[in-house]
Image 1 (tube, rainbow, N blue to C red):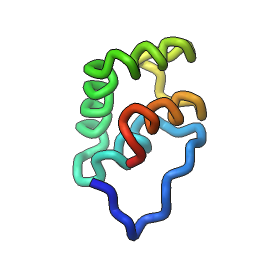
Image 2 (image 1 turned 180 degrees about the vertical axis):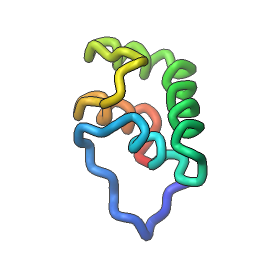
Image 3 (image 1 turned 90 degrees about the vertical axis):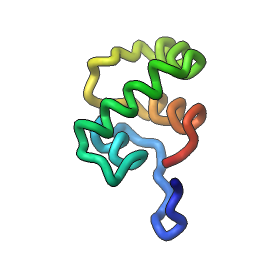
Image 4 (image 1 turned 120 degrees about the vertical axis):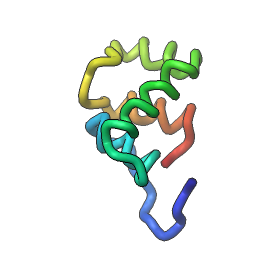
Amino acid sequence: MKNDDLPPVRPRPMGKGELAMKYAPRLLQDSAVKRLNKWIRLHPQLTAALETTNYNPKQRIFTVRQVELIFEYLGEP
């Protein structure tokens, strides 16, 4: 659910928890990260695109390119 009152999120290096909370601000961070990980796993095109950036599901920080790909496939938070 996009909130038009908040400024847009710009792609930058971002911790997994921070990005997950932007997609699910009403969840606890751990739950939000689990949800984001599940969305990535269930989206084959996003998973394939992230693999081209040497993405590791256990990494804790997304690169700018990885954040851009997540925005591209999942939409901006």
